Amino acid sequence: MESFQDLAYNGGTTQQLPPQFIRPSHERPENTKAIEGVTVPVVSLSQPHELLVDQVSKACMEWGFVMVTNHGISATLIQRLKEVGEGFFALPLKAKQAYANDAANGKFEGYGTKMIKNPDEKTEWLDYFFHLAAPPAKVNPQIWPKHPPSYREVTEEYNKEILKLTDKILELLSEGLGLEPNTLKSSLGGEDIEAEMKINHYPPCPQPELALGVEPHTDMCALTLLVPNGVAGLQVWKDGNWVAVDCLPGAILVHVGDQIEVLSNGKYTGVLHRTLVNKERTRMSWAVFIAPPHDKVIGPLPQLVDGDQNPPKYSTKTFADYRYRKINKLPQ
Ligand SMILES: O=C(O)CCC(=O)C(=O)O
Ligand SMILES: [Fe+2]
Image (cartoon, rainbow, N blue to C red; front, side):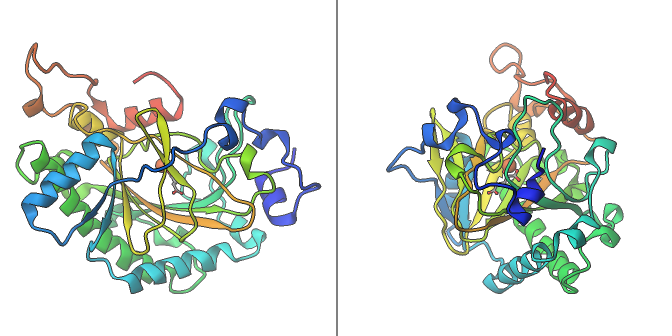
């Protein structure tokens, strides 16, 4: 069986997509086109606080997704982040494979493609680099890309900024629930909150109408903050349709993940999303997953639950337990 890398990097044996990438008919982009005329919410963070609470929390209740502009992270820093990620993926395959992860044995950090556990599962058309970026005590920069040489400095600087933006968004979302601004952050571990960097890389695909980049999923973390490279492909699920996320230069895309859905007892929605690939251009995206420490116990906030009126809609468990169940497709 040809691997993703054989195909994407060596051209494969044919320009026809091998069977492990061909989605069943009901999943194919050609049969599940995005709805026309609907656009995702965009919020400028330079507005007065009260408006921000309303707009950000409304978007995260109705969509589980919001694009933010005027977020305070400089265009130059985002550009440098993109350059170091592109620099790594421009290395020869062998050089990247020197960083190979081993997800089957619990080594998630490093370079890889998605592990397929079940022979019926289809392969996603992407490779990625994944590593922790916060908190400092858990980060191991030795396993980060050493090329380009500025990878570490740029990524550290970007993650500092992303953590500030995370604090701001978590405050707005807490207030949107009528709670103290620090409620969600402290429920997610306070200063022990984790940030994981995932650089997604989707090379051109010979038959993109039959394949998917990432398949439909919700992120298991609390929030995802993402910047794409200017190539479209992300779609979010809303009211029974896929909605294409247009590229808005400079914007940061915020996804509500499962842990915020659980803490808010379903007031905020973890957004279902997927990515399409294309025939001509390489798409890349830089996702930072914000998550509680693995031993943190997460359940509906007691302030949002009361007896018969608002019973808990989710069980309470450690994030480690949640992850294990999600990765192994077990009921939560
Ligand atoms: O590439 C994207 O825009 C989304 C990637 C994604 O959903 C993920 O890495 O969880
Ligand atoms: Fe995702």
